[in-house]
Length: 421
Ligand code: ADP
Image 1 (spheres, rainbow, N blue to C red):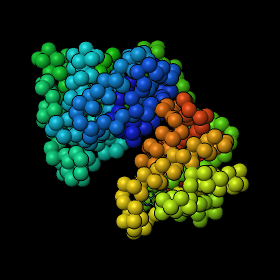
Image 2: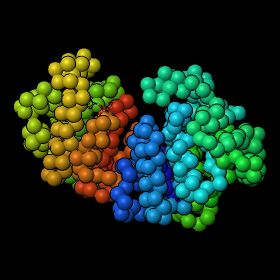
Image 3: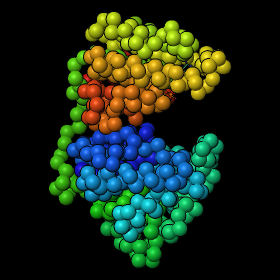
Image 4: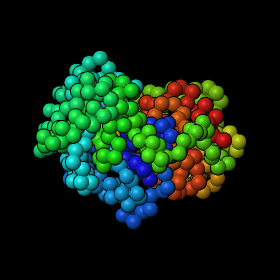
């Protein structure tokens, strides 16, 4: 392994894994803190997906350090702590405390802070983070339920979360190239600065920054910063040129979709699949609660369908129906019943020859992945922005795509299969 990444949430982990894969690094994603003696798979980059963004600080630090240990044991030469490109955090953390702990563990003298992701409109100028055309604190992030962002100055935001001095490398220095950036960082470090906010407006800037941080033990930032890292390993002769596979080699077998997502995008995708004549069964939380529908019955139905066509099992419903069901079962109970049923169904189906599986819904994906006993996925081609096909490394031999609710175009369920061979 060359690069180890610690991501503070699941979709962020997939994002950075896709970025690295696209830039030519063979990348696997590990879900959750790897077990203490787990051997990480061979890959150029390993991304550990944590769920630590809004945990209590001590938990986030402990999980991140455990992930760091596993990555170091797997041979990582550089660690990237990946957080959201909108610097999602509070004055109490978790970005500062996690970065401090990693810095201590890695013996790093300093680390950059660069959440810039120009492709998604996140840019940094004079140390201020912009979302599209507005500063972070004027964007919708100002009202985020868990991490409302009320300031846009990254030096101030970080200073509130760490005792270490925070400095800044401005845009003129970035434009002057990697050597100028390195010289400025060395100067700041000599002055006692430990964190360096770096301006970045374009992908070219991220490539310059990537070159400037070659060999630094710790980096922190959004997915964008990963763009400029593979070139360093390539130049050092550690990473071979690699064609990016347009399709994923998947084991032959049955194909299916499990959808517990009630998001607008997913409902549109289900509508398109039904209109295209998919073999579909609607799963009713009330029928699951009464025992009329069971995981075994859902699996039996799926297996009774024509084997060469994908089946669709979906509980997805519109908001009024979901509210009515939640009123009957309780909000959490309704979610749990569906997640549990889908996790069990997936396990039964994997044991009966299902090898190609699409799952819609963040929580639903978590439950299904757990039900299947999957911890590690190798990243493959991107179906739609942010959603790759993956191949299971450590569980049942399957191709799996995990789609967050609002991701994907309306024809997602129809076209995804074309990327498998
Ligand atoms: P998304 O990514 O779209 O938010 P999730 O899977 O994260 O999707 O969340 C959807 C939640 O709704 C899950 O807990 C799921 O079990 C639950 N759910 C699915 N279908 C229904 C339904 N018909 N009624 C009530 N809750 C449902």
